[in-house]
Length: 216
Length: 233
Image 1 (tube, rainbow over the protein chains, first blue to last red):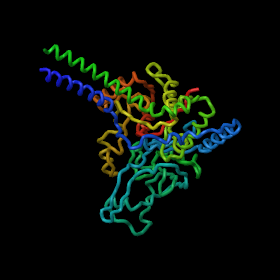
Image 2 (image 1 turned 135 degrees about the vertical axis):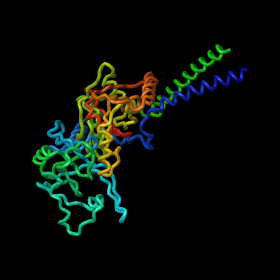
Image 3 (image 1 turned 45 degrees about the horizontal axis):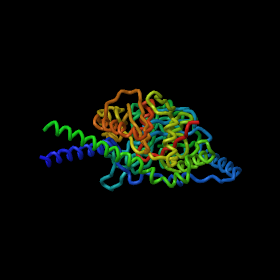
Image 4 (image 1 turned 45 degrees about the vertical axis):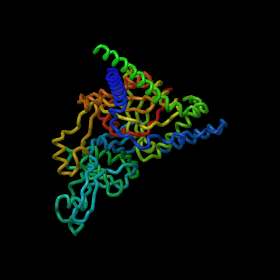
């Protein structure tokens, strides 16, 4: 009889502890990473003991930090909410609903060539400004449609797809207009950034060559 | 006999709870114990000192070298900011629900003072409720055209989610939309965990936010997201 009681007590004990541990662990959406900590010590360099030197060091660091901020308005492309902003540190000048890369991929079964349709992330600059741009259809555009790739480069040009203006930011990526304005707000592009015609015109006029572009 | 069993059961439950609490306390203290020598060497930072100001700037300079966004909780200007390469790419004013939140001072002290730590990686996030931005049927049609998976194009609009950093730092975000609970069971577990942890120290803040802005924060807030706090003045 005592053994049964002891077993019951032990079972309840184990269950209660197990439940507690489970509660503490459960409900966490993200899996455990291998490395969670940052090199904190590296982030806390010592200030010189001498007060004058210390003051100089602080001013130098402040200048360095301030130098990171663009002197002129810059473009921000938020691929998470599909938005494009022209902004300064303190205020937003233009906010436009956009379409960014779909994240989809296409593999050409004949050649094994592969394309991943993402908008690149990082820091870029406006490298070119083109009014009335024509789209030079890349290979994937034909392959996706099951069409053959034209030999004549002139056959690739499409005057209607990119809207009235295009701002190039390297590697064939552009901020441009679209004939599919109903899809703005959804990530459906092959990597370029589409915005509506009205906001595109303002963005084009307010963004000279060299304007910084931050994509995240 | 049944009464006896019940009594013994309740005694063992109490014992288990006590042991559980003891384990919890042990876990909480683990970090502190390993840092004892460090703490002795470095006294608690005065957040108004030039040393602290300098360290904060240096920390941001280091973070600005990362290729990914980092999160700035600016309690001085009551702003939440995402920065990329040291430049603001997303910001919202901090609308704190003061009635149910701990003070910004408390949050800042808990974030900074223990080790001391200036940059903490995000430890966890949990979505309590939300809704999908676009209808799946529309996205299904689009996905066939653009050859992308529906879930890549879909965006979760959060109604309520929380971010958690180590050392009992929790920020909960609430928006104006009415969503559906993602998992009632997980939600209960998260709430229960908070209740269990609260007696051992926690700083908890509730922030109101526009749902459109919350989409970005919810998606960017991946585990490990570097976070820096500017203390209130």
